[in-house]
Image (cartoon, rainbow, N blue to C red; front, side, top):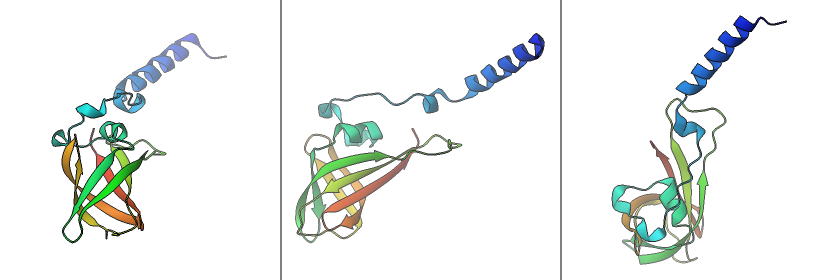
Amino acid sequence: MMERRKFVLGLGSLLATVAMLPCRSMAAETTVLDFRTVDFSSGLTLVKSQTLLNQTFYIRTERDGVVVARLVSVEQLKRKKPALVPLQQFSLFFRGPPLPALPSGLYEVEHWLAGRTVLNLTAIQPTLYRADFCLLP
């Protein structure tokens, strides 16, 4: 049978270890924004991206002018092991028209209300493009 003293010391060290973990990694991000308040000038985050889901974006190209695309998915990377440094890793998926097909590269992307930002879009299918993010929260 375990002695009371060892139990209390073990429980105390366990609680101290848990208390030292960053609270941010234990709590899920529950912030909900109104899409009218999202502004790209202060950076792009997971919460802002989720707020703009199913919104229309305008991708500016040198060759084809403006291509209209819709943000169809925001996927957050789930890590099996906690990172040494807390990171916000996610991907944005845009669906565009069949023509013109955009090659992978940097594009200026505009939302009518949030403003403009530059994204590195990777062509996955002829009409699907992905932008990957790895940010410090």
